[in-house]
Image 1 (spheres, rainbow, N blue to C red):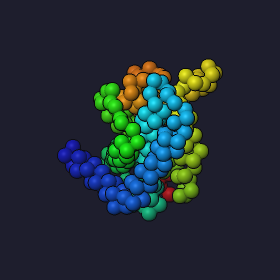
Image 2: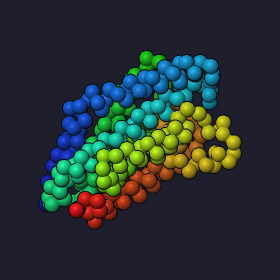
Image 3: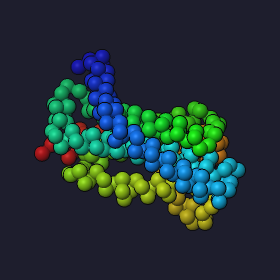
Image 4: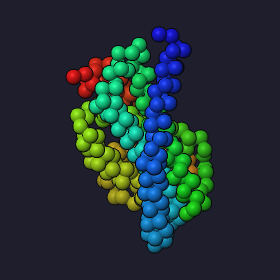
Length: 257
């Protein structure tokens, strides 16, 4: 199969995955926007007015980048996890496995669909935040790079979750018991400098900390971790998860009965 045909295969999977969540936009795009609006009202307007400033900015300005990143993370992950598991459950994925398409194209196609949804939701939440705070941009390149890498990382995580899942209940275990704690403890609502020394070292083990801080730097120019270290950590996780996802599909683990 030629490289031109590879691009056609990749485009086909991307189109299918994008149309999938756009057709049911009331379920995929509206709920995250409503959830984030509640965060803006409760944590930003009501609680934030009592907290005051954090890192030299109002509390609302401080948490907005983290809330946008939270929306990107959860939607990138959920899109691929549900889509790939549905294809596996309905035996549609077997058509891809027997087609003359490299497995890395399959991975990139599904991951690209998750990235599209994650980034689109992030854009919606960003526009929504303008009703509550005036957003400033310190470095647009860092914002774009961070959101792309983060959505890619968690799309890969959703794919791996779907491969291992044996039932629809299994694809909700990781978001509930892993993803939610990591995001809430990832510095979205507070600066790591507020933590005691020991807990700052513990927080450094949380990969979400690096994504949130890199994204916050893009908006506000402040970060609790080194920016280059943050980007390196995200790239390292992407390389590891992509290799693992490709290994699973190459071996047919969880896909062939």
